Image 1: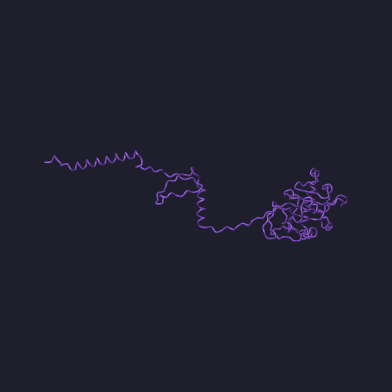
Image 2 (image 1 turned 135 degrees about the vertical axis):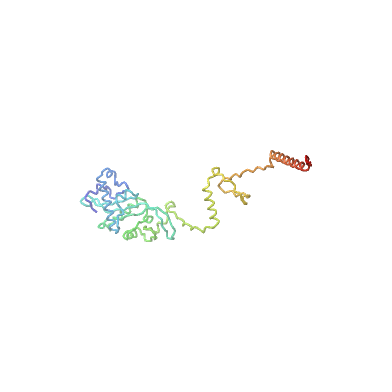
Length: 295
């Protein structure tokens, strides 16, 4: 793919590595004009890849590369276009958190390195450029093709993986990613974790509903001694003390003082009894005495 500017000034290496900084080297970062040309190259490659895969929108662009933690490998031919160079293709990769199914149907959570976009110019395909670019990425990432995931791979990419890396047995997934059987072998426990299926909720028993209501009532009641004082209710069942609730301080029952148990109360009661008996004797004696003063 040719451009109206010098590709060799932007990309000094045959294969350049780009990330969210959009800087192939320090020289490109200091030159605003080169930085703008680099963004133009990425945008054109993204549109060409979307057209080749018959996608409605481009997956790769300069703005998306800046906002996402993805990496892009760009391959150039420095001798084309009269020495100005031409772009051969690119490969974009990045880590994705995926929920996959192994060959036994067990759910697996992993965050592998994924191939997100891969494009070689149509007139330069079947010349070994794609294999050169892919092998460079594997060596740079110290990765194996069978341990990677592939986002919506085209039939050409699947044929490429089968031809060069003998990846034929893929495990069907419910998402757009494709993984092969080698993906589930010899992976670290940190990168691969099986997730247990959620157990369905059982039937709620009547007594559990009462217990849940009591718990909610206790959660709404402030802890002792901040709880408001409640006067005891007079009922037939008030003689029995209510059971203590777990997590709450016991309420203080009103202290009942018996009159007969107090020494002062005994003296008062004896004095009142003596006065009553004296009044009764005076009344009886007055009634039994004969009346006088009548003719």
